Image (tube, rainbow, N blue to C red; front, side, top):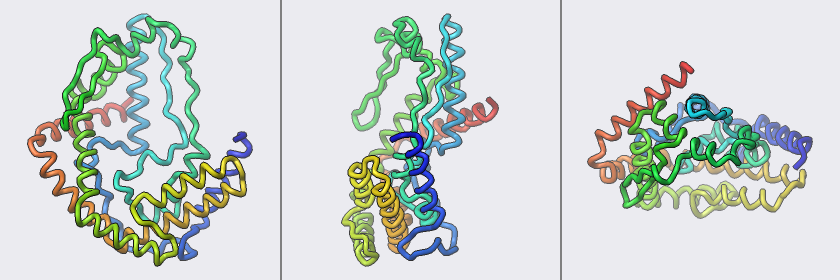
Length: 300
């Protein structure tokens, strides 16, 4: 897609969002503040966009400093722009306000996300430079995780050095421990009888709203499929944007009607009690490291 077409398509989508397209034909009515969307272990491994940007910038500066100490030049690399899916809830929970504003964020991300230019492309061909940045197999450290998973990192890399300086030497192990546990919690919730009952009620609600869907995630799959079919056709992209806003609004309305957030919260609490048993100290340690890193990044 050319830059001009991409800009026009983004403007089109934003215009649809600003107009408040919805199944009811208007903007969301004011009501009580929604419950915070649950995430495993109070979202200890999730960083909202502004936090992620600040942490990434601080870490990139530390990588550059490490590379300089080793006699190499590294230029800090920004994150991709235009990603509206980074904050997606792991259970697909969606508020009416989110739906009215940007749907699921699928079409807008497809149209606007741009990877950054690789400012270190010239240096990347140098094996010594790459070894300094990413480390070497001789210094590989394997870390056993829950659920018989295993992660590793190269302890001699500037990437590891930067992470250790910003977050603390135990952060990589703790973060990935709760990534694994969090994934297990989400899977447990999705098989919980309360969640499945809520899904049945939601499905009936979606049918009544004129947007039939059997399971959570089906509407997003519909949008993905329509986007692939649309290619760069402006009329088709216009249609997909409208479909996404319509489906997401019905989805959010039906989630609210079935009390999905409360159901997920209850099922998640039970799953965490089982899967997180014996990890209380590790969770507290990760929270402490997280807060220290955020404070450091804010001062950078």
